[in-house]
Length: 293
Image 1 (cartoon, one colour):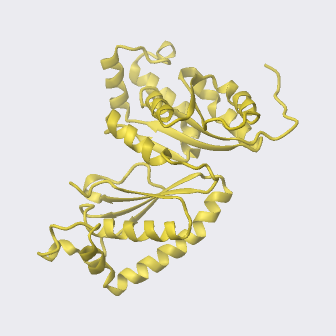
Image 2 (cartoon, rainbow, N blue to C red; image 1 turned 45 degrees about the vertical axis):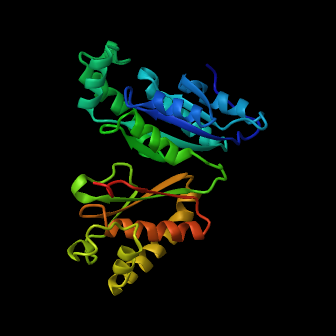
Image 3 (cartoon, one colour; image 1 turned 90 degrees about the vertical axis):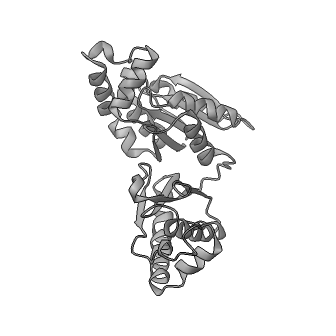
């Protein structure tokens, strides 16, 4: 194919779904279809700019999602996405990932052939080769969803969390997450803030059964001077980062607050920041990963 040129910028809001084969790209596409998106699955990467250019001439259409990067085609995804960004398009990239053993197991269970198996001597080797090819795409993604421990329903819920009610106004969308360190750090977190230095309501007998969503826990955590200093400084950090992320074209930011078990302190602090961001007009969603554990 010859070199592509564009006489006018391609300005279109779209989501590109990339990632490892077997990690759930097609399922994400199906979920977006259920949300009313127009989804093109298995799109060759070289057609990404062409489809986006066509989409800019369509008025009053559903939001567009492209599922790309299958097998050997993965090598050119990063180049085509860079080309599209350079054209002036607004892109959000979601990258689906999973551990190598998980992907090998899924291929074994499905009896399907990995698309890179023809150039590798094993499924493990094919997975690792694809991981290398997609390294740049993963590194520049707005959201990385690790599906190693997710079932279909969990993945669907995560997509709803990210895109249900999306108004596509171009602002950076923030997801505020609480979690427990003993259950592992969320793999999709952009910023991780440790709340384990705050006084722990768990050791107050009457507060132990409650969670950080309860006013009593929130008031207890907020009553200590160290909490006020922490909240003030994190607000200043976010006030610095959010405009910078938006300027760089990052569409989704995940801020994770962690405590030991993910039930009290991190939940209370996450609620505090979600409310603060919403009051400032920042598109914000909140997720409490471990509050019921």
